[in-house]
Image (cartoon, rainbow, N blue to C red; front, top):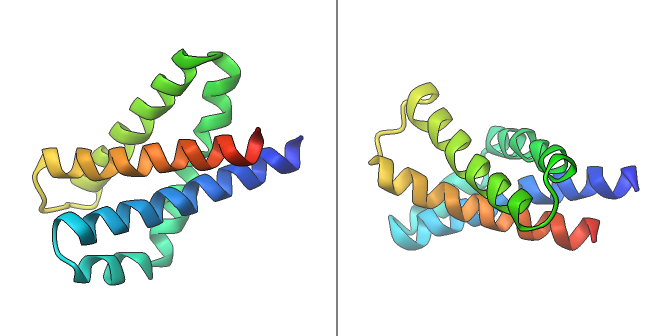
Length: 114
């Protein structure tokens, strides 16, 4: 079971990061997907943030766990992008793109761990 959880976290981080880059390319500028999808540090951050998913699911069962994980995976990378990395994009855009990350990460995690 531990191997599944580890694979789920890695899959969640990678899927979320790719989905975030795809959303940026689709809704902002097409060249953003290519620029964002090839940055290795984004995958490390995505996987590091996804590490919280099994902890949240262990503390909160059912829909409450999914909602808390979705909120955390939307807010935490948004704060990191705006306050830590100095993203020049508006808060609403950053939150929307990171919501895409969060949703894709949760779906990928659930598909692997299930």
